[in-house]
Amino acid sequence: MIPLTTAIDGYLKWRTDLAVVQQQQAHTMRMDTLKTVLSAQLPEIERESRLRLLVEMIEADDPIHGWAKGELTRVEKTVARLTTQQQAELQEVHRWTEKAAAAAVAIEVAGGNVPASAPAPAEPSDVEEPAEATPGVAATERPRVRPRTSVPPSATTQTAQREYLTAKRMTEAAALKANATTRRLTGTESLDPKRLEALRSDF
Image 1 (cartoon, rainbow, N blue to C red):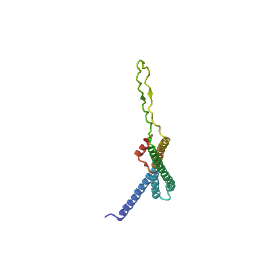
Image 2: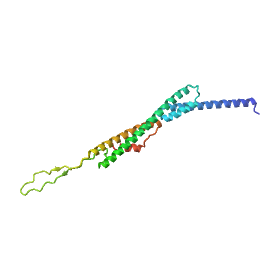
Image 3: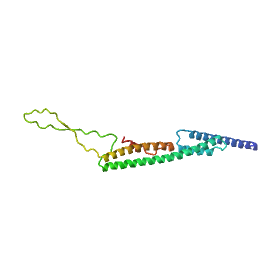
Image 4: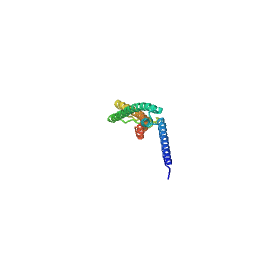
């Protein structure tokens, strides 16, 4: 039969060992969370979430608790600012996309062509066939080059083409800014890479 004192000693040792293990686990979790929070690659929304967790798991009298609360306040303001900035930049993408579409419609209505990234190659000139030689007179003249005539685009078409190219460039620039802001905020992109590639295809 196990003596009572031995049983009590064993129980107390088990409780002590358990408390030590729990403290070690809590310390490891705190350090891992703190290390993650300090990562420069961490998106701001995730940083905000990790800081909330850190504040909850650390005792109020721990110096890290005060630091974490201060960082949480700062990051919350950053997240709010980036969210507002992201929405404004996405609206700018939408605005310039609509301008490009409207300019493309205006070009088609005017009977012109929507401009591409590079100008179309010049059409070859026609060679005017020499006139039939007059009997008794030597044909010494070289064939005359007659440039092919083309109808220049109207002023309305040219204006719409310039507006279209400007709107396309501004759309791409706004999309790149929106993507950069979204990556900093969430770690993802606001626009699909294929759509970005389509925006660049005209330049």
